[in-house]
Image 1 (tube, helix red, strand yellow):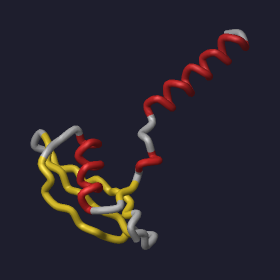
Image 2: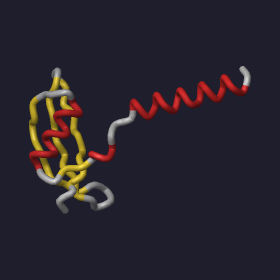
Image 3: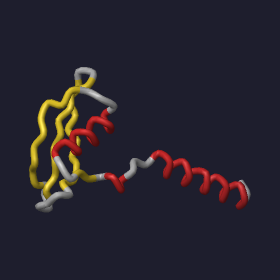
Length: 83
């Protein structure tokens, strides 16, 4: 493989990876309701089972939103920006 093809493959791979990366600029919520909205969007819908305001291992305040979808329970951790 020549250098030009390698460069093109690298650029294409980086472009695809950036498109597939979640938007971390919106990785936080100012309220419980906003945390529920973010978690519901990330899960693609489902039933909210619980929301807890907890501290992570670094002492940061986060919302833990538990969602049931398609028979599976997932917990989404959303930064609490209000504290």
